[in-house]
Image (cartoon, rainbow, N blue to C red; front, side, top):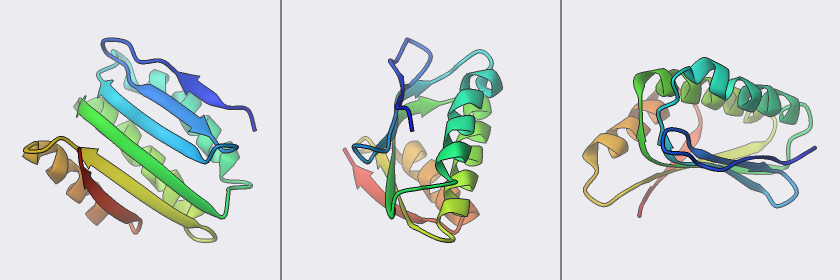
Length: 123
């Protein structure tokens, strides 16, 4: 599969989806004006990846902040990861800055809404 990579802007996150390196990450800030359109190619890529995933997929969410519309798209990504977890091992690393209770609570909320294994990592 081709690597999917985006460099962060002021309002959009860095996204790296690279199965050859086993690196799957969404990082920085997610405030796109149209989150559904922004994340559509990411979701398409993940759906294609889900057809032949690695034995172990570790997906890192290392966001400083995300808006409500981004949360919906992140949840869609987690749903695809949940489908992958039915046949392969999937680990979600949810990173948050020390003292950022809101981001920790968001990770906890996503963990409760899915059947994925979450690892909370303090930066």
